[in-house]
Length: 406
Image (tube, rainbow, N blue to C red; front, side):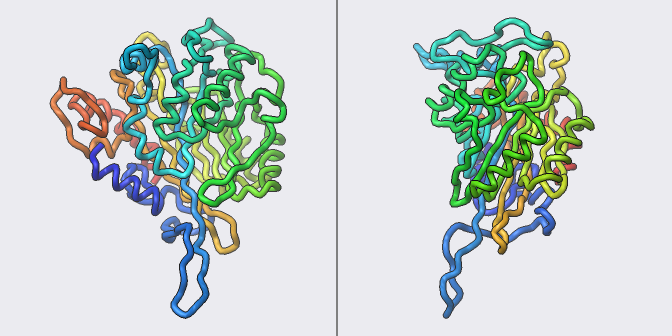
């Protein structure tokens, strides 16, 4: 990614909605019941000549990405980047996205696999109910934090793959890295709804799963997607003063281009019963469209952020669409009545099947292309010709969804 492209994105995240190309091209879907353009906002205090100071409306920028799955190719790439004496260094795989993540007030990852304790063997742990059971290495949490993530959702079909001990070690690893989390818990108290403040806005982020590869543990251990529970949790968050509520939902039907009726009905019921500002979906491993449902911004699937899919010898997951993902960009702007409208947009992400580095697609293609065989360092050196070609294929595959995003 060129320096100019990075600067443009950071400025756009700071000042207004970002388009689907990741270069400040405009908002996606507009705001709830208002034109999509929106006014420039800030967090300071302004004044009109001869009048008392007037507080400017507040705003909040949140980004969220798709599934992080440390499968074998990701482990191998992390091992190759590791310094002598270290097991893994996954930061280079995230590096091209760091300017995007660090420019946001909140950057949310979806940690689909449980994470092991320091030094614990990671990888496949047998076969469960129709899927392999996985454990990610401890080092993935620190890499995510260094890349710029501030928070992770942890509720997925894989959360209980290795049992309750791995739920605990996942949250221990995230705590050690300085990442807040939601979706799984070590104690009933930790499972309670909480809120936090970012950029002077009180926020609630909730996470649930509707599928489980292993029999689910106690309800407080792993949050299950039940309409009544989600609605009650959102209402509790509002009682605690949440001004913006974001819900992450992990769903179970994979590789579909659009949500199934059951998932759509669930979102319709939730948003009809309570006020949710944005919903992001995980689990299908391919990107799906965006729309407003009862006024709520809904990303039906963010696809994969990082995985070992999209290659031969992985069955149905050879599908190249599993290399594509979205970074949801949600800008919340305060209205005069104190509620917030949502300006929703997205950045297309493309995981290179060879290096497993994840690139912001169009911004990366706008940068320099170096000779094939040269080291490809993303933001530092530009894409080599072969990598650029693979990113272009990602853009072509995703064109239909991107058109739907604005």
